[in-house]
Amino acid sequence: MGKIILRARGIFKNYRTGNRMVSALKQMDLEIEEGLFYAVVGRSGSGKTTLLQVLSTQEDVDGGDIWLEGEAYGTLSTDRRAALRRKKIGMVFQEYRLMTELTVYENIVLPALLDGRNIEEAYIDNLMKSLEIEDLKESYPHQLSGGEMQRTAIARAMTNRPRIIFADEPTGQLDETSAFRVMKLLRESSAMFGQTVVMVTHNKQIAQYADKVLVLDRGALVGRSEDE
Image 1: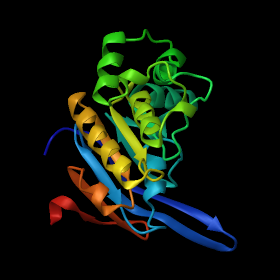
Image 2: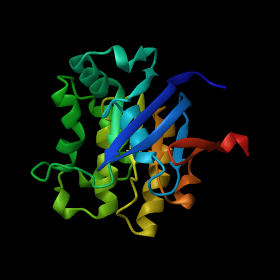
Image 3: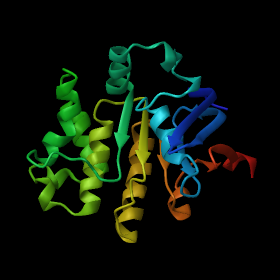
C-alpha cells in the first residue's frame, strides 16, 4: 500500500426527510492512497454524492472524522477549512460551473488569482496541452462543446496543484464519445501531474478508468476493487 493521503474513520451522516431519518452514510472507514484514481459507484441513493461532499469539506459529518494529510476536518475553523479547500482540494462538477464572461484561460487561472498566487504559465500551458484545449485559450464557454467545457473545468480544478481532486459525475452531461474522451484525458492528466482523484459515477464503463473502485449501498461501503 502507498502513502495514505486521506483517511476517514467511523463517519456517518443523517438527513431528515419529513418525519423520517435517513442514514446517508453509516459508520464508514475509508483510506485513499496518494496518486491513485478512485471511482465511487452505487445505485441512486447509495450515498455516493454525500460521501464526496463530506470528503471535500462541503458538508460536515454527524460523527467520526476525516483527515487530509494529517489535518482533521473536525478540528478546523471555518476559515481554516476554506483555506484547506483552496490549497489542497480541487472540484469538478457535472454542470461545469464556468464563468460565462471569462475566457477559457481566465476560467482556468481564476482559482490562482482568488488565492493570491502567481500564475505558473508553463504549468498552465502544459495542463491545457494535456487536456487538448490549448487552442481554445481565448474562447468563451458559449463557444465550446460539452466535452471542451468539462476539460476546461478539469484544468481549473488542477490549477493550484491540489493534493486531491473530487469529481462528481464529471461525464453525466456528455454523450458517450465525449464522456470517454474526457475520462481518458482526466486519467492521463492526473497521472502526468501526480494528482489523486476520487470520482463519483453511475457508469460502470467509466469506472473502469479507475485504479480502484469503491462500491456503496445504502450508505455503507460494501466492496472494493482490490477485494475482487
